Image 1 (spheres, rainbow, N blue to C red):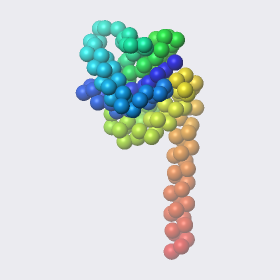
Image 2 (cartoon, rainbow, N blue to C red):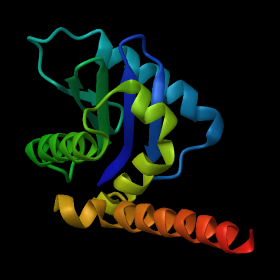
Image 3 (tube, rainbow, N blue to C red):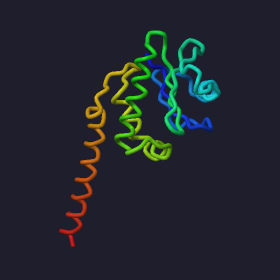
Length: 157
């Protein structure tokens, strides 16, 4: 089971955190600090799986961002690597390229993507089209709303 999903920059600043298991709000920062410190201190030649407390940390670097996933012993490392890679590909497809600014200014959309992929700590969807479908619906509704507003203003004048 996935316990948490973090996106962190090279300076160790958390850009996105999503928890699938209850963690006290006061312990979030402490947990993230320790996890990020452990992952960022490792070299590229070292293994990307770290045993930490009662779970495993699986991390991968993409450009200037690190994706860290905390899992329990029931998850296989290879499945989580595939999940990380798939999530990066989905984000890349939606944002044209995965960058730190895209995440910062579109956190709601990143959360929608993660919510479509993971439910209660379990990976439920890997198909890119299905994952991006809710965002496409929101985009179409937004376009229709703006067209409706312009039409309404035009008719009123």
